[in-house]
Amino acid sequence: MPSLSPSVPSAAVDSLHFRQALSQFATGVTIVTAALADGRLVGVTINSFSSVSLDPPLVLWSLAHTASSMAAFQAAAGYVINVLADNQAELAQRFARPGEDRFDTVDFTLSPQGVPVLAGTVATFECRPRSRYAEGDHVIFVGAVERCQFHPHRPLGFHRGRFIAIS
Image (cartoon, rainbow, N blue to C red; front, top):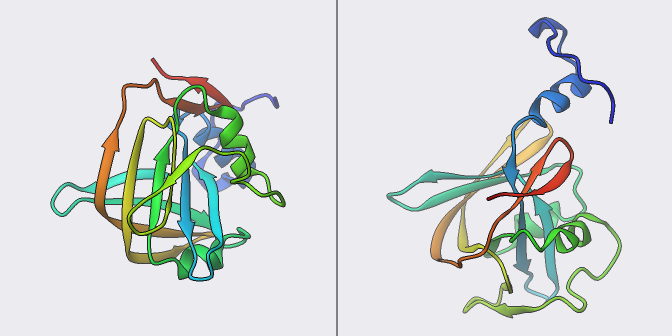
């Protein structure tokens, strides 16, 4: 891991320094899944997930403009945000890598809307797309939560570029 510079004046912030500063914030790890009209399943690992509103229940996540799954998520009629458990780091890595059948051998069920809900997660949020905002090099997706559930598992975290267990 490169050495960390503790401070750089804000006018001099470059992308590497900004990324290193962001890595100091521990986040949860999620996989967002969707089913397309042609029956294809898509999924991607993200850690940019947050609540937006309790009334109405809204959440957000973001995806890079350059992500291979961008068009699929923009076209999806719904998606599920699967919050991963501490024993699902391998699953997070699988859905972060391009070019393989991410759902092959993965345990999941389908929501009433036909969207994959991964097994063994800490929580799931079944969402209907509400809005999207292009900001910088990402698109922010805001979802209206139609159903959610949670389970008594320990969550998976991400800090300083690696997976961690969160107590």
